[in-house]
Amino acid sequence: MASLRQLLLTGPLARSFVRWQSTSASGAAVKKSGVCFDLSDEQREMQQLARKFSREEIIPRAAELDRTMEYPWEIIKKAWELGLMNAHIPVEAGGMGLGTFEGCIIAEETAYGCTGVQTAMEANNLAEMPVIIAGNEAQKKKYLGRMTEEPLVSAYGVTEPGAGSDVSAIRTRAEKKGDDYVINGQKMWITNGGVANWYFLLARTNPDPKCLASKAFTGFIVDGDSPGLTRGRKEVNMGQRCSNTSGFTLEDVVVPKENVLLDEGAGFKIAMGAFDRTRPPVAAGAVGLSQRALDEATKYALERNTFGTQIVNHQAISFILAEMAMDTELGRLAWMKAAWEVDQGRRNTYYASIAKGFAGDAANKAASNAVQYQAHPVLLQLPTTLLCCLPSPVLLFRLSLALTRSFGYCSSTATSRHAE
Image 1 (cartoon, rainbow, N blue to C red):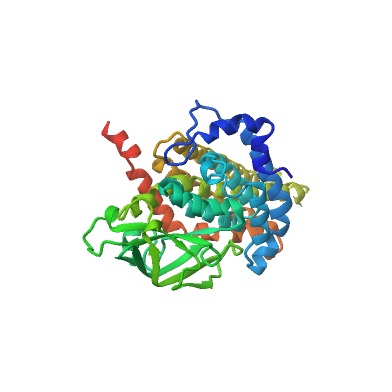
Image 2 (image 1 turned 120 degrees about the vertical axis):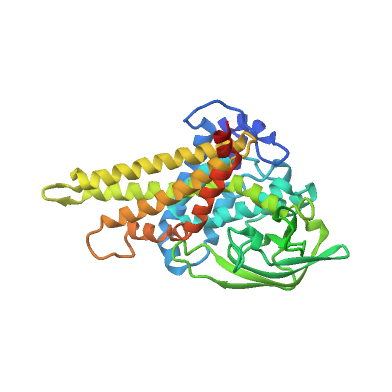
């Protein structure tokens, strides 16, 4: 199986690789284009590569990984070898500098195979994004460069026991002492938290509780082997069980000032800026799950016979399949719009929020509908039953999705329409 890098350097993809190397100041490729609902030849090759990988490497192992809850290191390593990991890292840091749209193509196809594997891969991208958009040359070379040299993963360390979507409630503190910062606090429910080589970490540097969130927090790069950093146990998720979710504590962890992203007090803006580029892949992953649920349900509906005909011929069934298909296609269009918008160099909070909110709900509904086709007791070995377990963390994002809807509606894109 040819790697993504090989496809970029030979064949049709080689022509566009030069274009992708021209990146914006934020590190994301800016590709001007008009309206088109088709993939380019290059993007289609990426899709086929990711689809083949999902079919041959992920799907055959998904059920066993869910049962054992083992981190999918072998799959991660193969994905890294093929260039399906870290594809968005800038060329100057050793990556391919692909845009958000291309990353979403990969995310949808890998999630089709297993959202647990896709979550592990995408959490790595989430952690790298603050460094991509705000890191200096030395930081990118050191921390992004190592990701292209060997199969490692990173983690986004923001969530705490009392702070999730409400980032302003973060209690982890960083105190400057000389040329270093001493960090104390606790992070919780961090994807890849127990296996990360390094973390993007958000900590409060201004102790004044009245200080605006936009100025109170600083973004740090923290090595996973830092003295004083203790990783917690792996949590048992309701779904996506092969991904690693765990917390970690920081007790007098010393971080050099060289590991501060941008400037002291800029952490909140960096974290929010990263979401514009990482929400679309979350939506794309949800669409991948919806498509898998639709395919499995359709396959079963064509095989199962009742009252002398395939159950797909019963309107009660065909209507549900039609709604699943509509939601899947709409979710796909939503992530495409959100990804395209940010690749044009524009803020996409409004569109990314729509995509994540809609596609997340659609994935839960699609998986639930697929399971309902099984008239007998639920069996864990059934593909549709496994699918029902996989979106559970997405279901737990209900509060996050509600806030996402609020963020999107209150963004300048939405409110400006009412102001006109």
